[in-house]
Image (cartoon, rainbow, N blue to C red; front, side, top):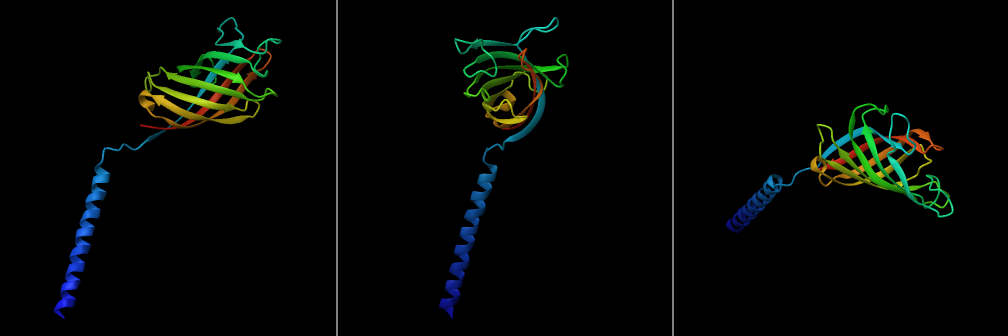
Length: 188
C-alpha cells in the first residue's frame, strides 16, 4: 500500500512540475515582445492623365514601346511612367492624400494585361511620409482586378495584403483614366 501511495505522489508531483513548466512557457510566449499586425482598410482614387487639359497637367508619359507603333496602353510592350494624384473622391479637385509613383508595361500579346509597380506616397495628416508598395498583373479590361501589397514604410512598415482596382473612368483614345483602389493592408 505504501508503494502505491508513493507512486501516486511521484506521479502527482511530476504532473505539477510539468504543469508549472507549461504555464511558465505560455506566460513567456505571451509576454514576448512580438507585436501583432494591424489591419488597415482604405479606399481612394488615382487620376492617371496622359492628355493635358486647360486645368490639368499630364501625369503619365509613354517611355517605350513597339518601334513600329506609337506607345499605347493596349499595345504589347508599351511602357509608361506616372506620377498621379490620389484623392479621397472621384473628383480630380478633391482633397489630395498623396501621389502614386510608378511604371506599368503592357505584357500581354493581345494587349489585355499590364504589369504594374506603384508606390503610394501619402501626404495627408494621418499617414504623412508613409508608403505602400503594389505590384502585380492588372487585367486591364476586367471591371475589377486584384494586385498584391508587397511592402510599405512608416505607418505601413512590413505591409502585406491586397488591393482591388476598379476603373471608374476610362477614355482610351486620350489615355486618361480614374481608378478606384480598395486596399486591405496588414502592417506593424
